[in-house]
Amino acid sequence: MIPIMLNGMVLKKSIGVLATLALSLTSFTVASATPKPSVVSSVSEWGFLAREVVGSHAVVTSLLTDPNADPHSHEASLGEAVLVQQARVVIENGAGYDSWLTRLLANRKPTTTVINVASLMRLASGANPHLFFNLAAAQAVVVKLENLHKQKSFAALGNNFAPGGPQTLHRLHAMTSSLKTISTHCAGVKVAASEDIVGYLLGTAKLRVVTPRALRLAIGNGVDPSVSDLASALQQLTQHPAFFVYNSSTVTPLTIQLLKQAQLHHVPIIMVPEVEIHGPYTSFVAGIIDQMKHALVIEGCLA
Image (cartoon, rainbow, N blue to C red; front, side):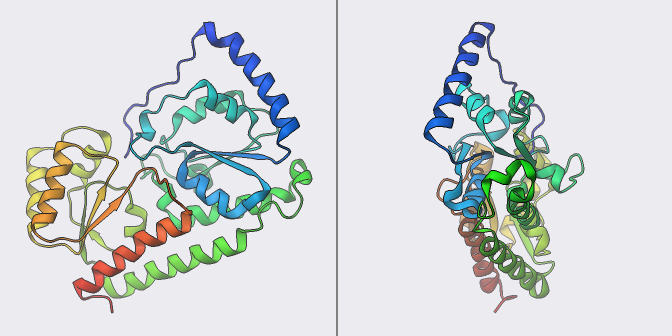
């Protein structure tokens, strides 16, 4: 989903003293009981990816793990502020997707390294913020994590901070190859989507999303699309696109109407959550690509 407005984090003045105390106590506890560095991510997808890379050499925590939560309108808690304050590495999606984390990072320690994925990819303003479905972005994050031990401030982490990096990169390259194979054989094949959650995967595969862009953006922003766009989307589903991507975290009467239309006309449905809860990251994304490939085999463009 692409945000129009995000709710800010509100920490009342009466909590200020407690927050300071909590930060101090947590600092002591973490330092004495958990010598491993802490990696904190805004959403679970980046957390799962980090866990594949660093393995047991760091403690990885994702702040958003509820598949029914809306990452855009999340309001950070005091506990999350403490986790960010104590983190050695913070992975921020950026592009307006997790602005609440940006506010928490305003008080980070000088020793905290922030990986802002949107900045890493030099993402243009207004672009699709679902970067955890951008395999090039995932590769860039892995490389960044691999290179941290080369920085002087990370000397204590040693050369084994990211032992899973090579294997993770190999799996990401394999998935990219799968998408390129799809693009070779199925470029231009029509697909439908309730919104642009896996837009980067579809773009790499060169599949054509026929659902009106204005409708996809409206659903992503939580507003009603035009009557004509809805009529077009429903009509397109009767023409049997290769598959229909459905954001299972955005369920409204309108999205259910689209889903039922797809089911009625036997369009293969690929359910994609906004927040993944199982992991690992590469298995999760590979599973989505496999569903795409299976539907395209049925379509007839892929063997």
